[in-house]
Amino acid sequence: MSCKSDININPHFKKNVQELVQTHRFDAPVYVTRPHIPTLETYAKALSPAWERQWLTNDGILHTELELALAARFDVPSLRLFCNGTVALLTALLALDLEDGEVITTPFTFAATVNTLYWRRLRPVFCDIDPYSCNLDPAGIEAKITSKTRAILPVHVYGRPCDVESIQAIADRHGLPVLYDAAHAFDVEYKGRSLLHYGTLSMLSFHATKLFNTAEGGALASPNAQLHDPLKKLKNFGIEGEDTIIAPGINGKMSELHAALGLTQLENVGEEIEGRRRIAIYYNERLAAVSGLALPKFDSDTIKSNYAYYPLRVDGEAYGMNRNLLQLHLQEFNVHARRYFHPLCSTSSWCLVEPGRLPIAEKAAQEMLCLPLYGTLSLESAAVICDIIMQLGAIAHKTL
Ligand SMILES: *Cc1c(COP(=O)(O)O)cnc(C)c1O
Image 1 (cartoon, protein in one colour):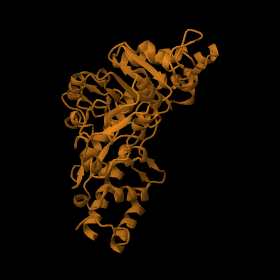
Image 2: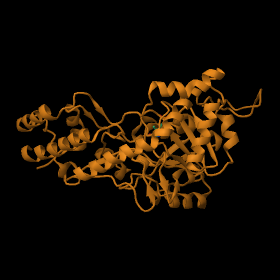
Image 3: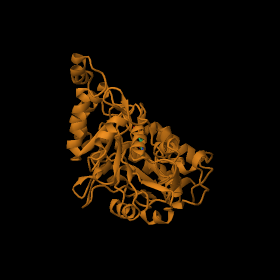
Image 4: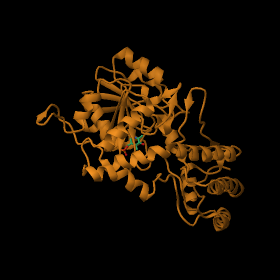
């Protein structure tokens, strides 16, 4: 028995899967996530202050209200809203004056993390990841630091905290800023407070696919207020006062329409997390018995999880088929799991790293599959998804 490439042409396998499809296929597609959305009435009500004032963007009152609410929620002295996470990250690079050098980062992330470096002529220097957390492994960082290194850019992948203490110790030894991509880390706590207390700046994304969303949106948070005023100017073209331009800033502002959506979402994000938690725990209970699947761990003594993702790791030999085939077969059931993150950022043509140089990340990119997880996913649907995954493994073992 092995994970075969001829899985699609084995007639017994095919017949068994087709029978299962007859009984277990979802009528409507089940996507990996679904955005939390308020009712139109609720949203219209939240928008009315902007309509009354006829004020759509540039420091509107809804924008200010959301900025302050999020800073209070995470108990950070500085939080600035942005039009999206990518522009927030780009603005952070500008604010820290990072340009023309190297940035140590992880290949196991969404393209945006590494793409922003390109816009500042910064070269990504990839370090391998920790095999469990899938975050940048601090053990590899120091060997990559050179005179050209300008910063460290780790990612809290799936909302799992990076080894923030070790990373900070390395950064302090070498006088480097740490910029966290915290796109997945909304509401995650480490040692009793928001993860956004670590590093020089952290970027949040409020894209529709994220746990907390404003359709498009993002933020930069910081444990000190040093960059609070500069960031406000940099996201508004670098304008100070009426007509002084102090830096080559960008248009990174969040509109009142997005801020209004954010304010309504804030009221329900706790409920959304609770809904995801129920499903994630259910998946963990049901899938624990399936050989070849490594399941995510959530809350611990030091970590309060946000249940943003359900990353499942598939050992093809032990499960009966590899991750790619599992993803393909799940599609036959109208279940659309996603390969976060594949391919690795280090394989993009503008930062190509030879295969084999980042073995742990390469393996993770082959094995990780995120299952559908969102607050309105029913336990009944989760049960069917678990049945399908268990049965597919059993069929593969029996027929291949
Ligand atoms: C979503 C995401 C981003 C980009 O955020 P946008 O708000 O979509 O620009 C960056 N990094 C990671 C890890 C992400 O998941």
